[in-house]
Image 1 (cartoon, rainbow, N blue to C red):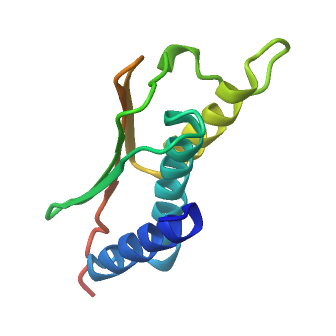
Image 2 (cartoon, rainbow, N blue to C red; image 1 turned 60 degrees about the horizontal axis):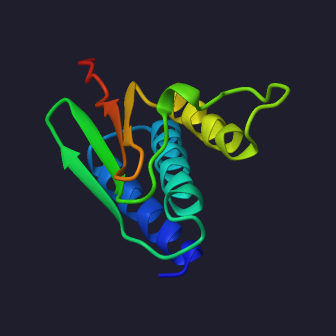
Length: 134
């Protein structure tokens, strides 16, 4: 798929699932932005401008929605991804760091596992809303 179609399909899918799990409109928007950032990072960084596979999996649990974005690209050293531009910082890692910062801020839990030369998995979790009785 072209990137714009891929991103739209992923956002639509996660939005539909999250709405059926009773997330609020604001929470759904947060999830969509976080997942979109993870997908954008994979598209921009994993394959060096070439083609490759990006897998998106959504695991539904009674207490959370878990989303995994996985690529088999070049990977990176997660310890060196920066969240704020610093003098001499690598521009590619700067962009990656901003996306990771959005993901960490918008989701209840996130982790990035990346192995240089083997790929990256971004795992994001949003806890389901707590139902209140009136």
